[in-house]
Image (cartoon, rainbow, N blue to C red; front, side):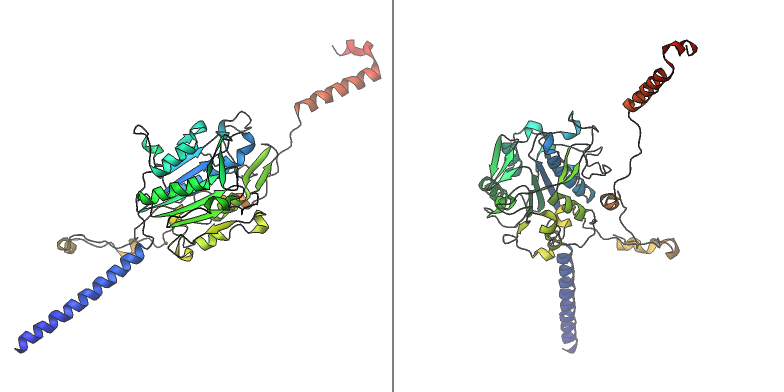
Length: 387
């Protein structure tokens, strides 16, 4: 009887320990996957044509460059550019688009993959991308292949007004149409969480009609306000970026894939003293506290990995035959992410002083002046001594 009681007590103790261990592992796993998503997507849209809207293309390409730097691959980015400023005849530096007046940060780069360009950028195609109503022959690169575990960043820039955003100066999308498209996405389980950012005049009016869950929205200006341009460049003849996107880009350049910076920090990047307009945001539809939402939950790619210097054997029977490397051979330096481009220094540095070279007409004029002085002094009869 005593032995049976001892076995029962041991079994009970073992069960309690196992339950506690399982609970601890589950809590650790929940903390590890606290964002609730397994993949990231980005839809980046410039809706403006014509050379004087250069800044809208630069806005979109700057965000494109940032999300790629933070880990979202081209296969998960849908890039829509209404005009190709890099190949515009007015561009003094072909195949480039600059976002800063120093003209040292070319956001066009060598590996830009534009999925929808020129007249392909329409309201219909944009809504088809969001809702998945794509013709069967559409290439994979032009599809938003998201699911219910996808976090999606949607960035839009162009000219807008109270409740609408213009496409190509020929049509417009309204805030009601955009809200209904997001509701279709939710009903079709095409996203887990969605971050909507818009840089346009009266941008806050575009998220007023949203009613679907798990959407966080940011805008560059309130209703009745204009979203202003920034960084005028005399060489190109136009403004290079809009104020709101410029300061968002400056903020993102300080972010790396392991950053713990949250969305509340993003809300503060462009106060009215810098933007002149009043940026707005909406979080009432979002289930999580913005303070607990990392920037990389939307601007980065999921990296559910842990780095360890120890050898882990998947088969316990082989553990005895494996030898651990000496501690001296392990890397002493802590692991860190490589700096890809010194963009922070580029943004804050002063423009370089260009070397002065006399124009061609200056040299010609100088020779003409010398000849005139010669004729005035000696006359034409002395020309025979020269030739």
